[in-house]
Image (tube, rainbow, N blue to C red; front, side, top):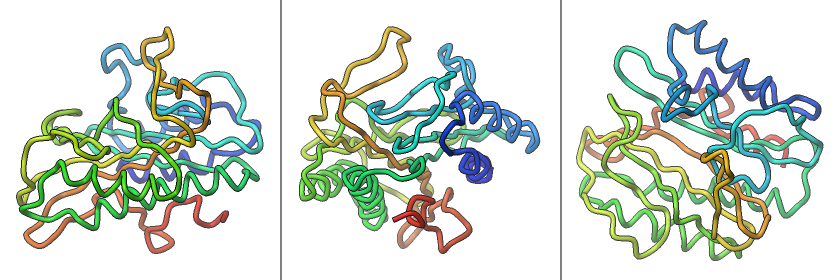
Length: 243
């Protein structure tokens, strides 16, 4: 269901559309599927999804600013139905974006998928950060340290914590049946972040761009299932068709 709702949001992403309009479409898509948008009123978050544009790392609040050609925007969807949450996000291109932004978004997606490739029983959660940071640094990018992936099931955010940077001190070993997210936030410049007075919007301190991708994963006996994988285009994210 979360994937279906993100697919609806993807059709809204274009120059001139406001993130508030995307949020409205997300809210209606949730109602049509008899599910609840998990972010709405979560610790007083005022909207049904997060929309993070350009230098916004995560938790951007949808507003009346129209998207502009050349922007990148992340849309983060979580839905709740029958006692369980599902969580994913993608970063989208708005019209024609510069080569630096293309490289950033591509690398961020690769960081996520490389980490997913290593998920199987017996792997320590702390290992994922080593994989992600190595790939990000190889392309000249940095990894946000203030936010991490998380366990998710009957609770929106729960154990384990899944940091995306190397040499972290996360505890726990993957076992069949574990459900959690990986959601690396990768920055063009330095990873240092600050939060706006709205208490939610996290931005890069240097004003450079940040991208993010997220999937919810189920650990199986031999690896993992990507519960939020796109069903069309062999599971590729939307930006891949614009490269």
